[in-house]
Length: 148
Image (cartoon, rainbow, N blue to C red):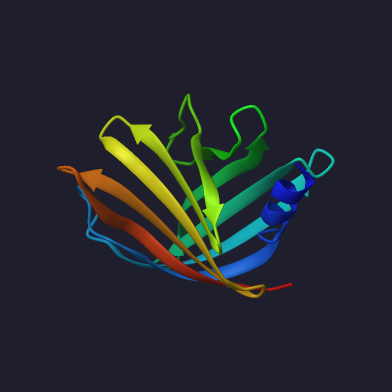
């Protein structure tokens, strides 16, 4: 399990990102600037992530994620809670494929996918996709740079 947790630890730190939000529902989309603070907690067994996004000079969205390794299921899990009241009874689950951590979960509207693409120890891309009419569509995409 140590190897799986060390893979998560690369996401620990303070990160700043520029994001593109794609139109959906009543939201016309646009851009946002975010701050991500992530740290290993509970003796290094989970990555706790705090997220804040600023849009049009306001902090309209924040969230907390808890990511870990489930040794029984042999996969990574993420539980997400946000300022819009979103949470899921079941976590998103997934695995690393080279430098990409891919997690998926069922959602009332279909499926949702989270992608972390490690470009270097100082930079990663993050993308959320959702199925719409059976096709994957981007919800948000961001590029994050390590601050510390």
